Image: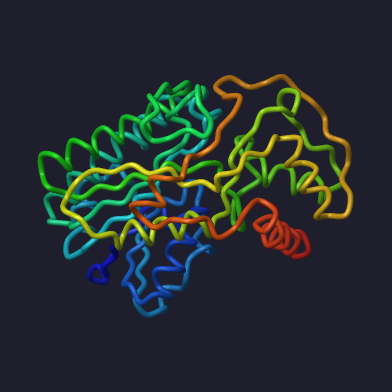
Length: 324
C-alpha cells in the first residue's frame, strides 16, 4: 500500500548522477525539494536553476552536523544519495570512504531524528554482499564485503537499523546494482564500466576489460532506481528498517555489455583485456522478489532499452565538445 508523504524532501548528493535524476522527478511530481551537495563530484548544471519553484540548492558537506540540523527542520523525508561511490577509489582512500559514507550517514540520521523526520530513504549497494554464493542474491544472503566502500555501506545500514529500532524513524535502504544512465561521469579514473565503454567507443578507442570478460553484473538503468526511491517514499507501514535490492533481475557479462554497446553504435574497436582489479566480485545478480512484494517495484527498463538513451546523451555531450 502506498501513501503520499507531506511535500518537503531533502535530497543529499543532489547534483550527482542519481541525485539529480531524483530531484527532477520529485519536482515533476509536486514535491518541494532542498538539494544538498558539496560539488566534489556532482555538477551544479545537473540541477534546476534557483528560480525554479519548489527547489532550493545548498552547497555543503554531508559531515557538517549543524548544517544538516538546519536543513532537516520541517522536512518530512530525507533521500540520502551523497557518497564516495567507487570500490576502487575506496582502496586508494579508505578513510574518505568511511568518513563520508558512514559518519556522514550517521550525522544525517541524527539530524533527521532530532527534527522529527518521518522517513529516511538511503542508497546502499550490492557490493555489501561480496562474492555471491547464490544467484540471484536475496536480501537474506549474509553480507561479506570485500572493499572499504562495501564496509562503509554495510556500516551505514546497521546505523539505520539502530535508529529505526531505538528512535522510531522509518529507514529504507536500497541496495543498487550497477546503475547506469545519462549524467554518469566517465572522466574519473574510477568511472563505472558503462560510461567508460561508451565514451571510449565514441572516441574510436579500445575499451579496457578487466579480467577475461566473463565477470557478470546486473546493469540497472537510472529510471529504475528513481522509481524504487519514489516507491520507498510512499510505502505504508509502521516505523521500521527495511532493505531492498534494486536491480533489473538479469545478469550480463562485461564482454556482452561491450557487444551491446558496439551494436548500438554500429561498430566498436576491439577491447583490450587487463588484469582483474582488487575487490571485484565475479558475479552479481539481484533477487527482486522482496522489493516486488513489499514496494511494488518492477524494473521499467532492461539493459538494451536503457543503453539507447544513455548512448544518445553521451553522443550529445561529444557533439557539444563536453568531456564527461
